[in-house]
Image 1 (cartoon, rainbow over the protein chains, first blue to last red):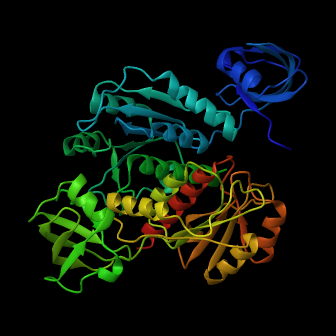
Image 2 (image 1 turned 180 degrees about the horizontal axis):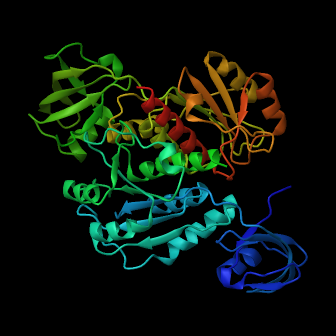
Image 3 (image 1 turned 30 degrees about the vertical axis):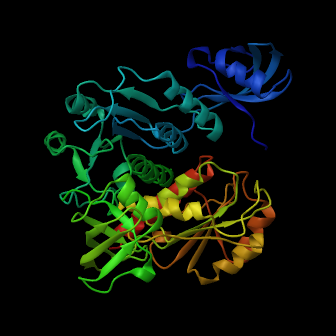
Length: 246
Length: 246
């Protein structure tokens, strides 16, 4: 089957059964109606970012809003990997790329924390554009889950508090002290958190605090990876592990 | 030790012993002298892209050229992974990203081939900017090897001819017919070639020709990956395999 165009419908508007009528508004309606020029009677795919997706028939294609009838609903699949990345904040033009890869490689989420060597100021809450980037990526790759995206206050202390709910906490540390490589198997069971330092690297005292809090130091290998390559590498190992376990 | 600035010296100019004097010219000299304002007596790192690297002392920092004395030479390390990616050509703004990731994740090389669904025309030879991008990435991450980068004529036939020198040939195919996942172990021994289709995907007849020629179909998982995410994923598995085997 040719790929259907996908649109995001917020979870509080998700239908409960075939026949239910829903309304698409805002950016998603604009994309459907103005950019893709979708018309009445066409079939599209909607998803809610929490695993739900389904086929819908366009009943009415207005200028800024579309109403659609539910044709069929799919069960939420088992989500991809249970990896959350905790990335040291930086002034990077490459952040959008990260959101794409997180969605495509089906990670659970990403949090940003402010390290000693972070450049620029961590925003007090996630930017709307981050979520939009995730939605775009989810539409493109068909992942019905949107990752959780958040910012952590209080630097390394906030990160340690955040880590409490995870089964495995790893610290990707570029140092000779970290000799054990991160493996797909490390990311296979339970929920994992992998910390990646900001662009200038992690401060040694920060690494020490994390290790004192139980984070396992791991190496990502003998190359000096850019932060977003380190992220793509961890996402890849976790995605591989997630595929293998099914 | 703080990271030294790295510069690329072509292999035909590589010194044979400490004390030898070399000359840096062109873009690399400009980067050293004008951008980084390196001065006489400073120590820098040079590499030749074929695994050689060493420390050098700047003897004379001119306007467009620098002469340097060899302080010490390092043995070429075992190269990272033995993976070559064969990527279906497309009009992508993301190609530079690919070169970076190939260098950082220490792959052997990349070749571009023109598929039935390729958009835009494959150049008849690799562009100079591709090599520059690889050099920049190598300077940044410290990889003393530059990947081989080439373009293949004759579409799928050229690709099949090219594949003759590889120990393992895989075809990453987005279809329900490919059920076996590509694994790090598949990329651990010998030289591997992984084919990734162009942005619109591979034509079924192309996939058939590759399979007839002995390529193994593999899946990269249950997500619709963009071509450069598929590439980063394969590079990550190979880099992991390369680390593990050492």
